[in-house]
Image (cartoon, rainbow, N blue to C red; front, side, top):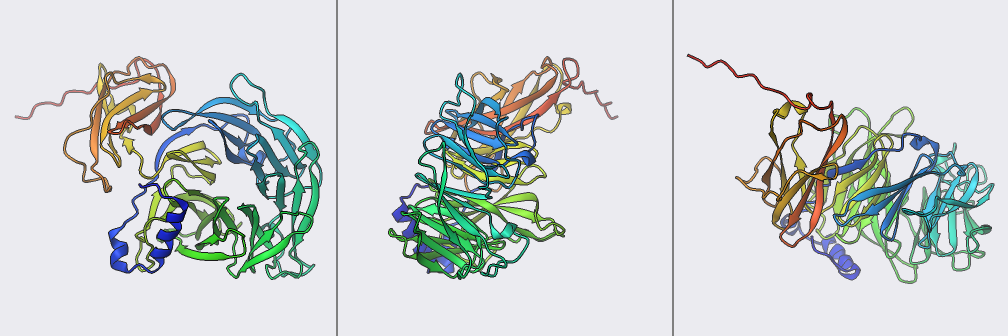
Amino acid sequence: MRVCSRIALVVILITGLAAPAVFAQRLIADCPLEYVASDAPPASSSIEQSPHGVFRFGTQAFVLRGQTLTTYTITDVGDLQPAREDVITAMGARDSKGGTAFSSTGYLFVSGEAGLEVFDLRNVRVGGNAPQLVSRTPGLRYHRLALNGTTLAGLYPSTDLPCYPDGTTACANTIDLISVANVAAPARVGSLSSVGSQILGFNDIAFNSGMLVATGAGGTFVYNVNNPRLPVGIAFEGTPGKFLVSNTRELVVVGNDQTVETYVMGNNGNTLTPISIHNINTLQVERANPIAFHPQGTIDETNGRLILMVDEIDPQTLNPARTIAFDVFDYTVPFYLGSDPKPNESVSYTIGNEVKYNPVAIGPYVYVVGDLTGLQTYGACGQITGRIEFDTLLSLNCGGSEIHGWVTGSQRVANVELFIDNTPLTSPPVIPGGPARTDIAARTPVYTWRVAVNLDATTRGVHTLRAIATDANGNRRQFASSNVFFPGPGQNCSNRRRTAASH
């Protein structure tokens, strides 16, 4: 997958609007998000106990889940390795829908029924300090937070109100603008009300190039909040939206249950130019419950993609019941809505029967937080991908056996290393080979790798098989993992009986 500049990305997108079907069929998105690894959730907490989010901070990533903050180190193979785990006992927020935001200076903002809380994460690292509570401001309860410099925008969305927004005092909401120049004493300095506004009610907010974008039932607005005490509306687009996805600069996506539309915002914020519209994939087939886009997504600028998820909706609560797939749209492929699947679309099914949240693209991977499985890692587009084809311990013969799988990549895969936990099982690494696999759908050749192992003496417990590949350019990436429970020595393998010879 080529890396394109933001200017080139916009040119490609606009060109794609007028591209004929024949041209579109020549450029096909091929970006499966293969499951790579997972990190189990903290045993002491549930995702329902607090707000949640994934945030990058230099060479670290923070995952807030169930009042527990897990710090991960980004390794040389691109995976996240847990470095420390801290239960934030000082956190008062218990609202699982509460808003979260993270500043580039190392402060975490959390909002719930306890108000707006600020935590100092600047020294949260191996050998460092636990998160420190800086301040708590009661009365500031939000489900959406957006941060730009020292201005924090907070919103309790109309989608969470018990009434339908109509732009009157009977059912309305506001966006609060809060100064966090002094994190020890955040102060509300301005607000935007939906009363009398064409937007009817605010659903989501995001900052783009310093301008505040807000979407709602009546359309999408851009506000200049350089002076938060006197916010000014500078652009309006009639497309309503339930959620926003932003790259914080020129791209903003207005999303609804079945469609999403991408806009380019002008430098001064006074224009929103539509460049693409995408419909949800036809995953409704053989599903009794309705499906909808998950109201969170991420823009992977490195590969020019919009990464969304698809939820199956509980018809009784109208909330997500489980996340069934990633729906990825490739901005570098001209889009064409006359087919399904669409040429610029890739669909990948997720692992685990649960709702997933907070998708974030970091390096070659996409990370999501599962309400049951914890942090999950999926291999991103253009990277090495593959699987460990391992079913049960019954497939291991006592005295020595084989573990195998498949691998492919945009560059030729030079070798594969297999690990159990952090112990290598291959020395030297093995070279994939044999006939190309035709049972795997991929645009690049897929080959089998095989590793001879003897795991008879593996200790009792859950161990992780990890597969790491190196391509011809020297890129080394973990591309698959599998958690396996070993009963203990003497029970980790099977002695197969000989079959009687036929006469």
